Image: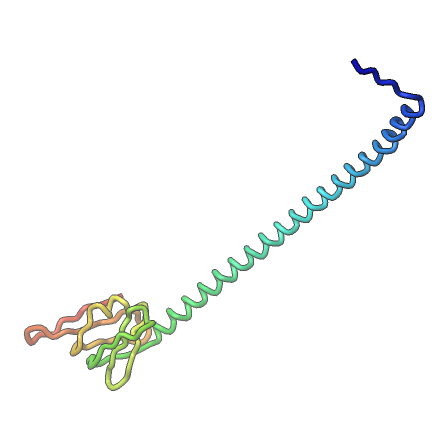
Length: 151
């Protein structure tokens, strides 16, 4: 069995060491807690700023989308064309919607008229009046003209 004997000098050294280290440990914990609190508040501020920026970006996107759709819609409504289709051409990048030749002029039907592009043939007559969204395609069958309305 081991017996430890401590001298008074050694006891005083241990006590002094503990007396010095305890306040230092408390001070370090206090500094660590302050740093943690600062990081939490900084993270909260960054999160708030990120959320605000995200909301602003989303609203901007929505406004631009609505404005763009409205402009496209107005451009389509204000367009007018009519005549006999002499050529149908599918141009790469036009989303599968054809351009047609009417009266020696090439006209892109537009995405709004995608359903018309699947129906039309060379020799059909097509009418789109300004201020209207309807496109009427006339086709001759058995010496009679039949019209089909696309909205």
